[in-house]
Length: 119
Image (tube, rainbow, N blue to C red; front, side, top):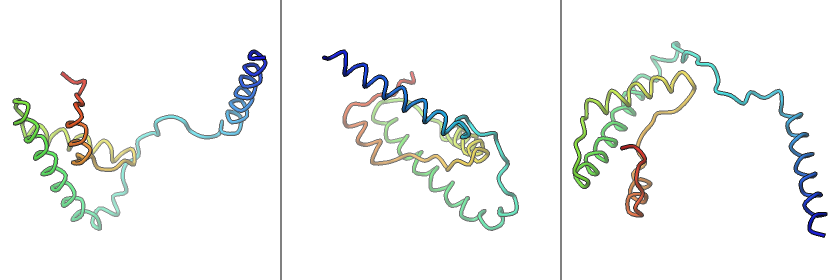
């Protein structure tokens, strides 16, 4: 009896997967090619972009300094600024959004004992 249910469920999964595969084969399931951001809108967004960059950088550095003090390691704000700048510039070519630290999420993960895999 159990084999019968396994056969039915595996057949159902296979048929559903094949039908979805056929229906969605026209969609692009890969990283999109990079596209330059529209430069015509730069004058409209430059002020907001600078404000967002400053706020994100200040929040990121304050969180990094907080954890650096707590866990006794050194950070370099210049290196952090460079890393965020390169990351956000590259992200703009893939229609992404600016990277910034999530204060509450970092605090929750740290309080529950979460550790980074980066050494």
